Amino acid sequence: MSPLDNTVNNMRLEGMKTLGFGKYYGRSYEEVYMKDFGYCKWCMTINAYTFSMYDFQNYIWKMNHLC
Image (cartoon, rainbow, N blue to C red; front, top):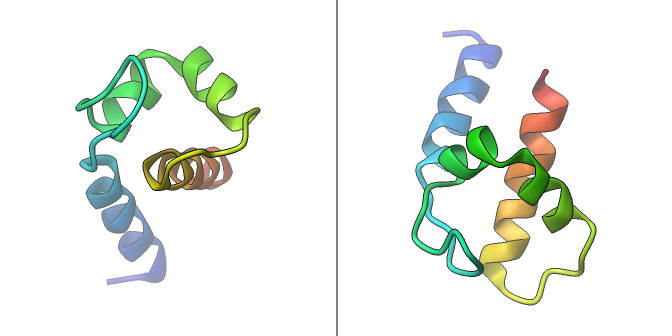
């Protein structure tokens, strides 16, 4: 398995995590990223006030830099 395959698999696993804040509470990172990128953009503009938000911001950053 190549390093790129490992990265893709890790991102799939991260995408299964669920949000613990906001209007998408309980939804998967991947679902929110794919369905409401405007929300993701907003989320990146504020200081994370929970670990869940910080973790989701890291997921968004990684997804944006993989493409």
